Length: 152
Length: 80
Image (tube, rainbow over the protein chains, first blue to last red):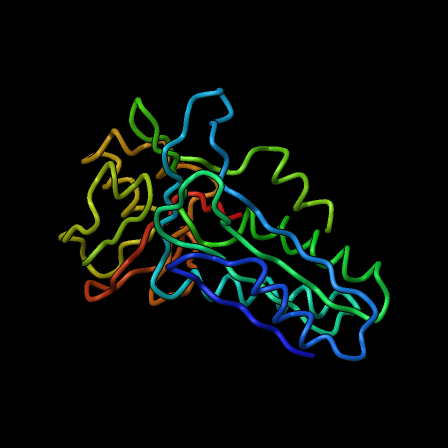
């Protein structure tokens, strides 16, 4: 069992993260990964120039580690890999990579889904979209919290 | 007592405040004082999803503070 969690201040390269996870998954039968990408438009359809993620000096990485540890305890996975950007992110650039490896596919699919539901609502970041009219703080929606809560 | 803010709270209040609160004050009492002095930050300070920390540990509203503590107020977090 291995867990990688990293706070990335520079570019997040999902192909490299996936290659690293696949490289560790010797003996496994499945790797599932999710890459979250900064959208070019807000939910209201306004153009977004930048997505800015602020983080806490200690609690942010701790939150990534806690979420990954919970996933490791909950699912029959061999390896977990979570990398999250901080700082200014241009539309189209990756924000988060969450991957899981397991002997059979179901556990890896579920673990990746679980990781993202927890990350959306509990990873310690403060996120704002910067557009033509200034910036707007983005918080989880009721649907995001409901997605998280379905795991009990 | 030093108080640190993040996200929309830092935007409204500033990154850091020195508050002349006596030992024995609770987190809830400190929050009410901050709201009285910064009414523009009332909504994120009162959010049920906002968190308070002392020494990187989440604390409840009833937590009793010391004058030498550094208290952090975290508005609702959002990753992904």
